[in-house]
Length: 116
Image 1 (cartoon, rainbow, N blue to C red):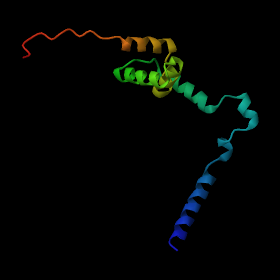
Image 2 (image 1 turned 90 degrees about the vertical axis):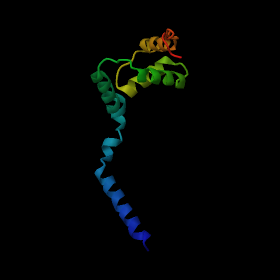
Image 3 (image 1 turned 60 degrees about the vertical axis):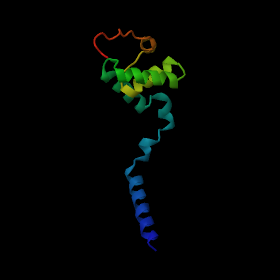
């Protein structure tokens, strides 16, 4: 018998959520889907444009390396993933150039001094 009240509470909560949710705004009309771009795509492009220029950091360099490997060296996909993740516009050419810079070995001069 204790399960019946819990099930009734869950059913009531689900009914409230369904009523609160405007199903018409979630499901696009067939006529509108072909004529106008998706609201999500327009909002995403606006966020990318508002964010400003993309600046490389050590964290973004590491993330670039991981994304390039995940995308199997498809720099267009990696640039798109970086753009989405950091809400900035990242150019494919810039992505490829930065990756090649990160792969170059860095010269570190030997330490001099009395480090015994």
